[in-house]
Image (cartoon, rainbow, N blue to C red):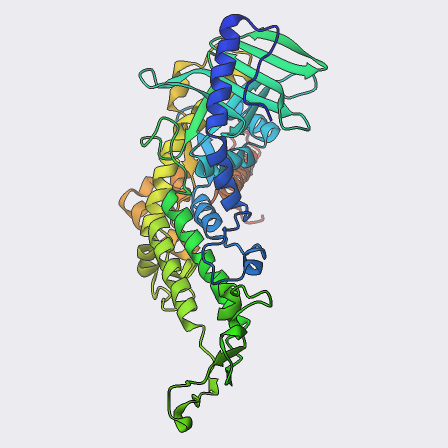
Amino acid sequence: MNDTLAIPGLTDDEQRTVSRLYTQLKEKELRNLLRSSYYDGKRAIRQLTPVVPPVYYSLGIVLGWTAKAVDALLRRCTLETIEWPGGDLESLGYTELVDNNHLRPTVKGGQVNSLLHGVSWIINTVGGEGEPKSLIHTKDALSGTGTWNARARRLEDFLSITSLDDDGNPNGVALYLPGLVVECWKDGVWQVSRSAHVWGIPVEPMGFKPWTRDFGASRISRPLMSLQDRATSAVVRLEGHMDVYSFPEMWMLGADSTIFKNPDGTPKADWRVMLGRIKGVPDDDEALPELARADVKQFPAQSPAPHLAALNAYAKLFARESGLPDSALAITDYSNPTSADAYAESREDLIAEAEGATDDWSLPIRRAVARGLAIQNGMKSVPPEWATMETRWRSPLFQSRAEAADAGTKQIASVPWLAETEVGLELIGMDGQQIRRALADKRKAAGGSLLDKLRAQSVPTQQVNDGNGDGTSQPDRPAE
């Protein structure tokens, strides 16, 4: 794998930009791969102590705590839709954009990569032949990087690795410059194509905690990685202990020190001595004959409780560091919440983290969707009035339907007219699909009622004519 990227056909300025960004990408690659390995459950620890046999480290024992820390936060950061108060998104083809780009899964993938590496990228492009008019996709920090202008709060350039060869070297890249996309691909030799556009740099960084660094910080922090390594080491020791703890230690009396040596006279490995079933105690030549031999024959097996206690302690430390409740990781000494308030309190840190993450992700997602709609409708810029578009996220506090309805009812009681609006239906816990169905049924019922009234009004009043043409009814006359 090469650490440099030279592409014939680029201008000198373009080549310098590509080289600088590719170097920046490679500098972050190892730490990003490390965090990916923790999340994917591929991080096996090295041998940390000579007491544990090497075979136990070769078992590939891993823990999924860091993945749980990422996924638990991710599940509380669910994008529901984009809203435009006072505007009509459907007239712009919003549903078409969402469906063509699988927008919700695409955004979810960007969120995962943002939590893993600190940042991911959401990119707008114009669709080619046979593709949707407007494309939205995401890149992780392993395949894309750029230069952040902290003063202007935007990217000055961006390099996207679009494909790799069998050796892991790039054979397809896209360089985004202001108003220009330079596409490069290698088909035997490098080929270069340039496309001008009016969208500046159509890339938005989705950073997690972007106030810590320009491109955010990983959810899998160094303390979390360290605690998982310590816990994995405890599991390795527990695994080794479980192979022997149920067997008592046997002692052979009258043996000398050669029992602790290899046939060639070299000392046995520490772990062989520690795990040996039989141990030798030589006679004391200077003691009285009746005291020369120690009368020790057996020691009871040792409990694995210390290893379990250590693992439980590491689990609680990890839970505190990641904002998870003890019940998510600990194996003993924890209690389940006894009420809804206790449940929310036990997850207060996680809920606050989710609210902060969605706040940070809202702006880049909103900008990408607005730009995508403008591209889809053949516009040359995003209209200023679209700045009022907003992201709507599912509440990070998991509530039952009864709780949501009760809370919403109390709010609507203060403002009764909300009951006839979509906002009011949201407050009582109805999702978007239920709201649309309810309003459609209401319109259908209202239309049927209006039709019945119109029909009733169109039926003429039956009149009784007395024959004199005045149109008035006369009382019945007695027969003559």
